[in-house]
Image 1 (cartoon, rainbow, N blue to C red):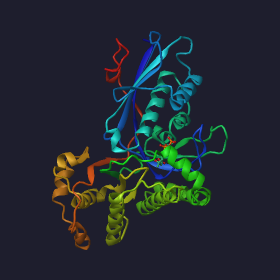
Image 2 (cartoon, rainbow, N blue to C red):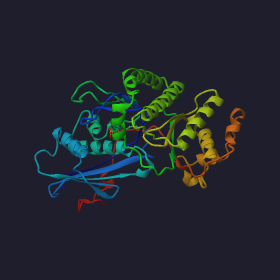
Image 3 (cartoon, rainbow, N blue to C red):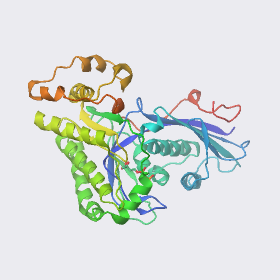
Image 4 (spheres, rainbow, N blue to C red):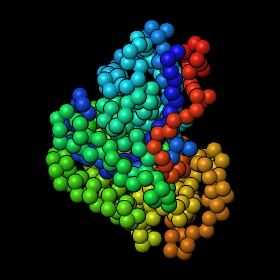
Length: 388
Ligand code: DP6
């Protein structure tokens, strides 16, 4: 056994969406993007990488199941890591990698982002790679490059053809805006979606909206949302976040053939959020949807209980102790007893409710970037080199 490292990495949710590549091989985007990093107490990938001269091949296990490591993306990541290695250079060895998520992959949350970010982070430790590693995460999966930092992170599209300046940059650390919360409404949906990789390729080739989006709309939004984050201006942040989500789904709808990621529940949530904000006279929460029907709601701490009470009124769960998933369990009682102010009371008494539309409700915050864990947390058995 040469060495062993275990790390964790977070999920991120874009507020300015990455959609479309100018280089499929290097995963270079057509536009810059920006996301919030979610807290790893609630959502994370954990990965152990072990290098040994006794192994006969590189191998990877995801959530306990051995996967093919000979995919282009894994091989590109391994090659790039090894080309920048300052450790393990003189010995013949292979790596065993074992990775698990603390959330169901089927939940439709960006597991590829936390997965590749964690893989790259752990391999960078193992091989002594220093400097920017976001570009290595990027060649695994574009959005993964934003998961190598905490807080708010932008992925600058860059201009170089070799991708050297297409990297993630932290806009603000997780301590900058600690009031920012995220509620994920995990929507019940059985449909198999078009993958992001395929969808964005088709949009780039056919959607008439792409040109203006990339040339002017996104660059302006990037400047505005960065300023809003610096100023902790939730009104601007929320407005831009919802507009970019709407535009992204409009791009999908104008792709030929059209791609639809949202379902009736998603659209109901969008309407509900707009009504709630309108009746409140300000943006109290802001939705964003990725390549699937789940709603990610960004909102300040002061609106969390109210918004959770609102969502559970429209989408009731039989048992809040399992339906509501978040680190702060004291919210359960507060949600049950919440009394809304007069101006929004009617919104809390819906005529129809949708008991089976959500799987569950996740509540989390903006959190830190990847972490290195203690040896005792390893997912690989040292004596066998196999998953524990
Ligand atoms: C809608 O990063 O999954 O979530 O680079 O092909 O692996 P590949 O795509 P991926 O696309 C994510 C798209 C998105 C928007 C975003 O996260 O910015």
